[in-house]
Length: 59
Image (tube, rainbow, N blue to C red; front, side, top):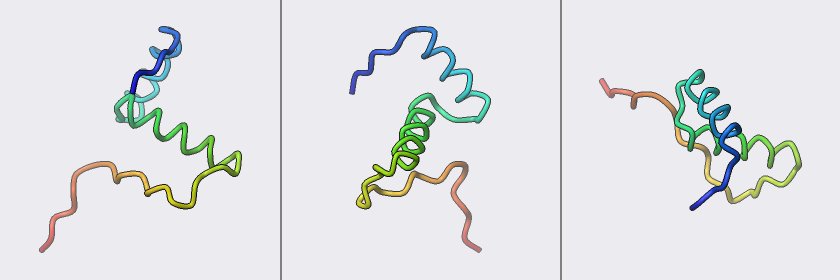
């Protein structure tokens, strides 16, 4: 998916993502999910966001 962003907005999102140890894609996904939830528009069929970090090891 192509997304046109003002370069200054992209840079700000990239810095925010780096601060949170996320990719820009993951940061945009997080922001969209928050906005949908806050607006009461999150689809009930939406999958949970993927877990961050390393997978847990099984003993």
